[in-house]
Length: 503
Ligand SMILES: Nc1ncnc2c1ncn2[C@@H]1O[C@H](COP(=O)(O)OP(=O)(O)OP(=O)(O)O)[C@@H](O)[C@H]1O
Ligand SMILES: [Mg+2]
Image (tube, rainbow, N blue to C red; front, top):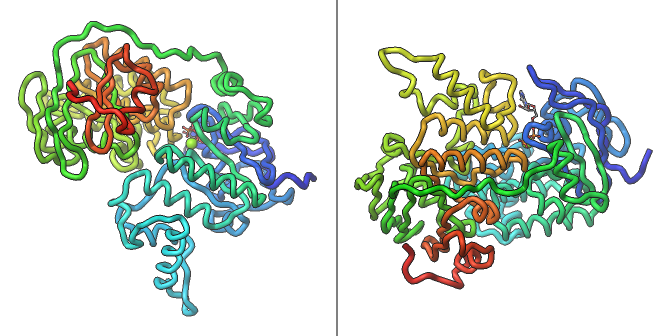
């Protein structure tokens, strides 16, 4: 018995077909602290959190709250025991309104048991006002950005005033400013004596907020210590079981001809007069603060959204992109930042998801050449280190990071000439990030052109030949490799500096 301990899990086991996701897991969270969980993609972090939240039943072991065993059958019961959770995968229904999404699972009822819409409106307005948010409660989620939706999820989970709040990669899609709001809230939660279990692959974040860290590997706890006894190198080597080469595998590659040129691309209220080009073998980056319009430009370029004016040239040929099909036909593909919305078909297998975009490649002489399809799927999943029992596994049962890798594999199989990647390493563990960078270098060597949108300046600086910077829908600057510094990029990103003519 230890009065400091709020939550304890003891000897937890959990298996899925073909995977032992949790193996004799023990750990304890103290009152008023932030306990960070680290571990590679597929290590078992989210699974443990879902066990604590009553989504999965453990095969063995115990959960104790205030050192008393509890049986958590479902999330509603978890909530009544003072547990709430922010999920890694944003699982929202696009047609839902803000007020519906804030009250789902916790509907206020009138005395006849009917859903009390007046009360829902009232609660929503109160919550929004408290957070100084100017939304209309009736706005549908599909009209919001990913970061808005994630922030609402965070505020919703916090609003229950739970004693144990689980945050599974809460900052993967929010802006820096919102991260500060979240950290402020975390401090408030701590000071009222509640505790937070926090999962993140962002090392700088971890060291800012953790009181204790537990490292997972392959379903087991490797180590658990107070933050003062940890340093970055130790955490990483415990996570990946080896020392990491922490450089970027960038190579100087002789560039070929211009493969994509975008001129004065404009879509009112989103971006204006955006021009850039990329050559064969080149990796260009797009830097900017969240909301600068980078994703919007790429979505229009790829045909997910329209553009009003401007010209696109692919291999010196003027091209009109009407929809996704027209860009895939031109061998231009895009890895989207919101994988739930645009990246995957959750209920289908890894193989189907990977092969989907390239079916035409495998259908010829009147039949589907499944052996070839299988071979290609296998090759790229292995290259990306996708961790799964087999390729028939449904993609929704993979860990978050592994889903991201499958999407990358999917586009690799199409053998594109131009690959646009939007936040390619989001949710990817430190070890696997390096594998993705290596793959990018390999693609560049094959004379492919890469366009990388990223919020992580180190990876842009580490991997790109040139970086375009956007601010408020416009390109404000372009820097070549010898000019890269975090400061120079930030000056253009915040709009304090603007280049007259960006080439
Ligand atoms: N519902 C499920 N069905 C089958 N396998 C599952 C299911 N949920 C998780 N797994 C498997 O359990 C293992 C642990 O997954 P988990 O999602 O807990 O990893 P994680 O540590 O959260 O990784 P990430 O950092 O990528 O989010 C993985 O091999 C995953 O494929
Ligand atoms: Mg996870």
